[in-house]
Image (cartoon, rainbow, N blue to C red; front, side):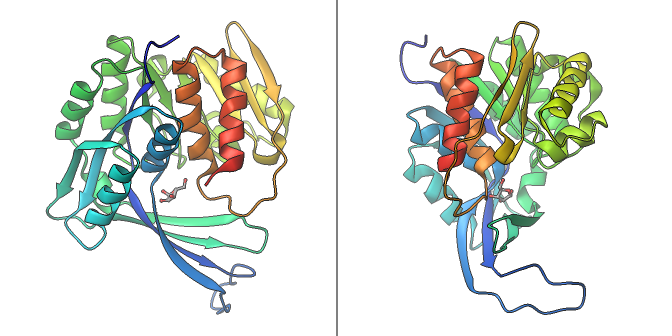
Length: 287
Ligand code: RIB
């Protein structure tokens, strides 16, 4: 059990989300009349950071924003949650990351992200992570900054005994050598299928995909199944946690809320199954 609050380092995407609601997605060439438009700070890394901070963790964010209209607001928003943004650089050339998000009548989200400054993360951000790891419990990583920087950060954390939680979102290849640095990998169905080749549609196929991820070198695989819950597997324990039934108002970033909460729960000394349940509750309640 940690003595004080959990200390969580996040290297990842910081985006401004441009969100529109519509009854359905347009077909090619079609215009559909939408209902509402709003902006909200997002990015998978920033969302995880906010989730952990809301649950009482001390959070250190590392990444990049642009020197543009969105950059200051994104930093201000993170600071508002008490998140240390001294590891976030302002990129003089690239625009801030943005995500164009359509929410349909079923509250499903459809996202196109343009990562801009996030993809400028380089050795400077790796060094910022290395300093931030001092005294940290967990490092949270996703796929919205260059993967080789995330893999190097995972290596650095592993060497220092800091838990590495890797959310492979959006789906992309992970360097094979990086798997052995991953304490926990947390794909959703699409990502699990991308990484393992197993078509994930239910708990049995999630188990199969999780076993492949363990064979690839991850110590723990946690497969998020949306309304079907979460399947988790490690050498020592495996199981299925059912989802919390909530009135769905918005599915954007529920998986990010899960990741931030999972990190806090494990840092607080909860066992894997309990931490997965805690993460599920946070994901269901997000935003
Ligand atoms: O996971 C949700 C996030 O994905 C959004 O906040 C958006 O910025 C995209 O990165």
